Length: 94
Image (cartoon, rainbow, N blue to C red; front, side, top):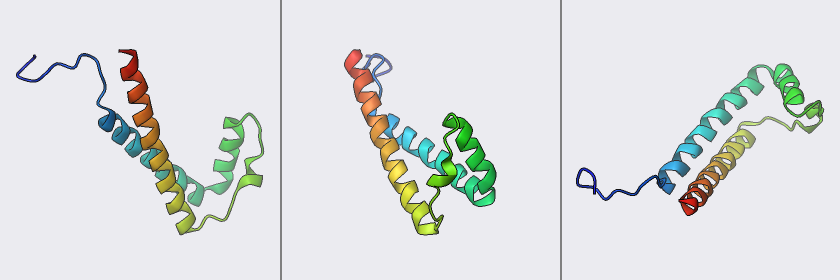
């Protein structure tokens, strides 16, 4: 025991990691949504570079508020699940 608390070694708190990744995903996604709204041409070009020249302009869908909000929610949930899985797998190696 350290400081009156049970020492858990180097194990990760699954919920804290999941929450952290969910918030990080949401912030990055919001920045991306805003960038696409402000400068759709530049963001498509950046997407092309990130995907090794794939023309992402053909993949662009209507950017409505409800579509963006739904995507944000789904991305945040996916981020939370990924964080939880990461922490769980990490803790299994300890």
